[in-house]
Amino acid sequence: MTDPVYITYHDEEWGRPLKGDDEVFERVSLEAFQSGLSWLTILRKRENFRAAFDRFSIPKVAAYSEQDVERLLGDAGIIRNRAKIEAAISNARAALDLPDGLSELVWRHADPDAPVPRTMADVPAVTPGSKALAKELKKHGFKFVGPTTAYALMQAIGLVNDHVEDCLARTR
Image (cartoon, rainbow, N blue to C red; front, side, top):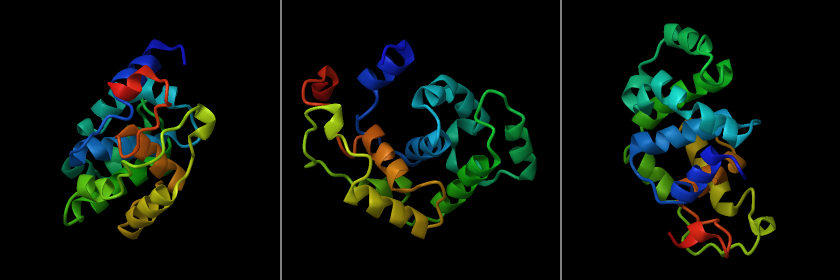
């Protein structure tokens, strides 16, 4: 972890509590786009994603048409994967239908009592909580939200704090 973009993300954002439907939708979307790729790739394209997806405004993305899909497939600044683009649009539509909102649904799965990892080897890829979150999201029609992706989301927005024991960012 020597890239300045990654270091800044780790030190200033990753693992910090984040709420708000559009904010959580951005993270759900970016975690899905990351599937099979390096997180650093996503971080380097993050501003392009924000511009391409109307800053991840759920109502705006939910209203996207096939024309928007084609526009996004032609945008070299993002990951041009049709299935992932269509999943982001479908997920925005699913988020609109959530009675309490996306942020509320996701935060019901917070695990503040998760054990503090001593080393990176202690950080799981999947937990019972991430399995439950993925299952609930899928029940509501979300795509590209398996248990591993759900756990990465949980880590990213502070539902769990997986900064290892001696990490300076753990106490910030």
